[in-house]
Image 1 (cartoon, rainbow, N blue to C red):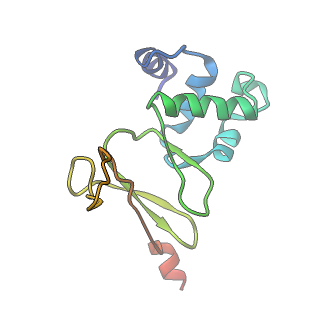
Image 2: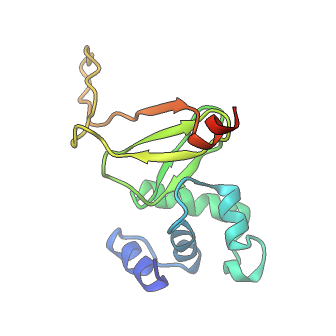
Length: 143
């Protein structure tokens, strides 16, 4: 994603197009399931290339982008929060128990929610997050 595309996206969502927000969106392109630490390293947080972005500033930007629906935050058990640009398409995840690799899985049903809770207890259910756990092909080969 170019800086210009990131800026246009921010404006369409009603957010100010700041250098820090554009930098985070650009850093997520091609790096799905990035942790905040991954982004810190990629952006050089605390150094001049990051546009003066601090660690707290990075978390603030991630929160703003998630609330605006520009990034998705997933939190697999035992893992730090991870961020991706793939939003609003009802996809799920495969997670390796050993190495932590995460892969996207398209929803077989196509529309949300993919599962029915059976008894909805009065809730208007509009989404189901599904995480499958197992061993990645690489980890299986090492076993």
